[in-house]
Amino acid sequence: MAITLYDFELSGNCYKLRLLMNILGLPFDIVPVDFFPGRQHKADWFLRMNPFGQLPVLKDDGLTLSDSGAILAYLAKTYDTTGQWFPDAPAITAEVLRWHVVADDITASSSAARLALGYGYDFDIPKVQKQAHRIFRLMDEHLWFGEREGRDWLCSPAHPTTADIACFPYVMLSEEGGIGREDYPALRRWTDRVRRIPGFTVMSGIFPAGRALQTA
Amino acid sequence: MSAIDPITRDLWQVIAATEEIPVGVVETTLLLDTRLALTRDRDGNPVVWLRSDEEQGDEIDPESILDRLPVLTGYGYIWTSLGNPPKELFPIPEYAESDRVNMSCGSIGIHVSAPRAVENFLDMGHFPYVHTDILGSEPHTEVKEYDVEVSEERDEVLATRCKFIQPRAAKSATEPMEVEYVYRVPHPFCSVLYKSCPEDEGRRDVIAIFLQPMTKERCRAHLLQSMIDSTSTITDLRRFQQTIFGQDKPILENQFPKRLPLDPRSETPIRADKSAIAYRRWLSQKGITYGTIPVAS
Image (cartoon, rainbow over the protein chains, first blue to last red):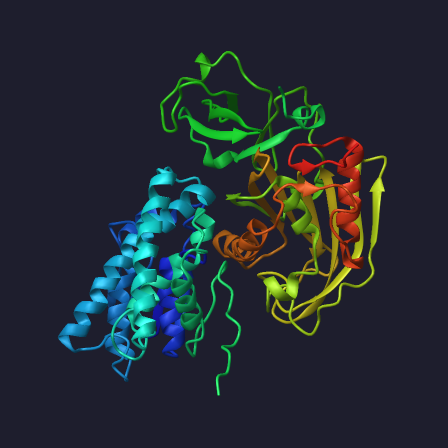
């Protein structure tokens, strides 16, 4: 049975799953959910799938799963034959899960600012913008030191993991929340690297990166 | 110290999708730097007033609101005015055709002036680059010659014979087609687009954008679709339009300056910008200064 994603195009959390499934070459069906303005994620039929009333929801093999971070882990462990996207080594699993939590903090700050400015949500805009800047500063430092050590991604392996997928969308959409990324050059270079992963796909509001400079 | 020009003050201005406003509960918004509160009464009719200490979500008896702003319901939206508005809103006769699917597609805040958003709506040149593989694709990037006029009788800008090859012109499109567009600008902050309908060659889909000028550099885009489509659901049709608008948003928000310059020498147009040139001139002649940078006198 095919994978079914309950999806809203403008949601960065839904996009995380579209992105990983595209990279893994996994076919899936989309059921559009009218999150805005229809608020279908609070409708009875949706709450029966996810009582927390949040997108995305993914159905596969008789399972009904929710939370983008949890679903990223599920998809990688089930379908990634390379074992790279959610590595089994306990120390690496801990690193990935640590960044999944950062991704949730980015959602609670950068995405909240975007929802407030674009979609009429009632959040304290200066407060969530400040929180996002604090996280971006920490990420920029982490990535800058990583580059010095030859590490291109958030976690220590020499390849991207679900941590990179989880943190990427709401970093890229931050300007819609009035959060500029001018001061975070290493963070910007990392977003370019994510956009050059084979199988990368865009969402509305995120454009593809140009090709990397070829160094001889 | 009114910074709102008299023309803008007397216009009908869109503020919300009617269906999204609950009965007896306060909703708040911003129009022309002015804080507004609104609700609907038991019959569903909108009530709009100048906001004082009301908060969003407060329960309120609409009958207790005596000092009300003018209000009108049109095309699924609530319109109000801070001045003396005309008797009627501009016409979109197609909206009343019984077999059309009419829907709001969300009200989305954008960090740019309302006239900038209108101008982007009129532009076809960006289709292949911003709406890649939907409204355009390389190498079909040419904007062919089209006609623009300002209708004296209807007081609106009209662009006709606009043609473009589109990979996926609408939700109902199954193959690339050359699409013909007609654009109307019947209101300084509203535009209505008619485009060939994939499902019925003889008729046209209608897509409109109504901009709510919140400040001189911020607005809210209210999107309307009035479609001939017998198969798609409202959710599908909204998703299609939101996908397009979501692509425009970052491009619009990166335009500088955020207000629209009306001096013909301030930006360098190309042939494809003919409708934008007419629109800017029309705004200038009307004396619209809100959200624009007027020609220095």
